[in-house]
Length: 88
Image 1 (cartoon, rainbow, N blue to C red):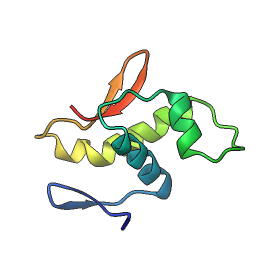
Image 2: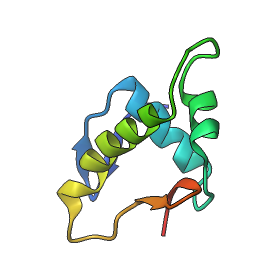
Image 3: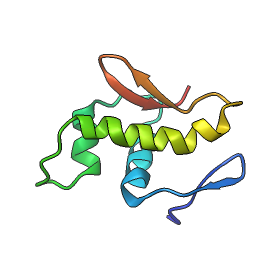
């Protein structure tokens, strides 16, 4: 509700699109989400979005929520050939 993201007590600044992506992954924690599912939730209904844009935003999000916390397990996982999931 507050649009705030923290990991180990540290604030993480996200764009609205990055936040929406993280929110969708968190609501479906430990479930594999396809690029098509992500596009349909994160982008507007009438947008012409190519699947590779999901890869771009996943990388941006990973750089903010996982990379700075390299001593901890990554939260955002790629499931090759299927999609992405948040969780262990």
